[in-house]
Amino acid sequence: MRTKSLKKNKINVVTLGCSKNLFDSEVLMGQLKANGMDATHESKKDDANIVVINTCGFIDNAKQESIDTILRYAEAKESGLIDRLYVTGCLSERYKPDLEKEIPEVDSYFGTRDLPRLLKTLGADYKHELIGERILTTPNHYAYFKISEGCDRPCSFCAIPLMRGKHISTPIETLVSNAKSLVAKGVKELILIAQDSTYYGLDIYGKRSLHELLAQLSDVEGLDWIRLHYAFPSGFPLEILDVMRQKSNICNYLDMPLQHISDSMLKSMKRGTTKQKTLKLVDTIRERVPGITLRTTLITGYPGETEHDHQEMLEWVEQAKFDRLGAFTYSHEENTSAYKLDDNVPDEVKKERAEAVMEIQQGVSEELNSRKIGQTLKVLIDRKEGNSFIGRTEADSPEVDNEVIVSAEKHYLRIGDFANIEITSADMFDLMGEVV
Image (tube, rainbow, N blue to C red; front, side):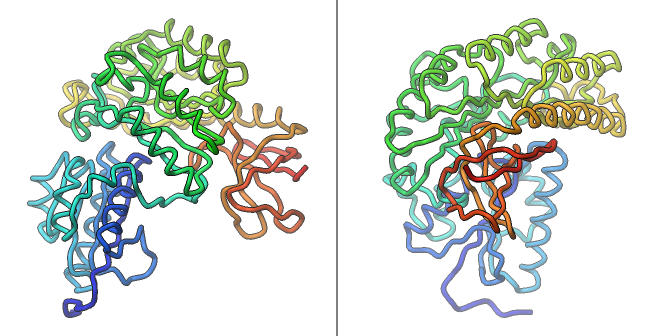
């Protein structure tokens, strides 16, 4: 067994789960570095003696990945490869007593709003003057931008309020200041994230204020793209569509998880909407912002979902032709209202239904992509892989959407720059093109 290290502490932050967790890890590292501490993100080198794992606790697969990661580092600690191990984030918030009992090798567990206490444990002071400052783990030209924390929605299947608490908006002036700071560091694209972005402002301004935030962010000089994620369909503030249409640097892109289309499922899920309202909202969004890219997510196998409900979803996916779509199997989560229901759709049926949804969507995606052949699109170059440059259009968010591939043998492009690319071919996932 290795003896305890005598060298200066180095902290490795490991992030699991969504972009909101990544944002939190970036804030943590910003605070650590401001305290003169050596912090890195998911270091490939085995040179950190302290590990902080920022966990996800959303659904079964994510929870299992978090537990497996904790166990792996707990074993490393037992073997003397690291000195200290801390766990934070959603899983820790939700299951702290169980985790303390089952994995005692972890030195301490922290919740989602325990940053000051975590910093103190690591020997750092929480610096209030650094609010908004962080160390980016993304390429320098784009950044995730959290506009609020928590959620007040009653969705029956969702454990997020249990882990993230009530909705708290960040004031517009703070966000605008943070955006200017990021742009000064080279950021060209902000990806707005929240548990529910369309609820923004209700708690501090007494009204939905996302459209006002978007308008003020769009005035930040040097900000080329503003992208909106995680809109909620019930009570959707249509004013944001007017701002999106009027402001050229707000991407004609909207991520709006709809979850289902069957009235019985929407009612049981406590989504606060109906099939007819959902269809009308999608039509209205497309009418007000022609050419908008719509991304959504759906759940298959929710308690009580019948074959008729499933077929209704399949028909809708085929007709609606969403530009981007992901399907997930229902996860029976403790302490949610749906947990009281009988989880009566077998796992294999849940999976088959999700695969059926995605099979249709792949055909839709290929059809929509093929229409772009011959068009010249503005592309932001994210990275170089082998003999190819990889970029994204206004219609694509990092990690989850399509990419544009350009030959690095024929063209020279700079990462973080925009380029005009003529699309020469396409498949269901990607576009291929040449520099104009």
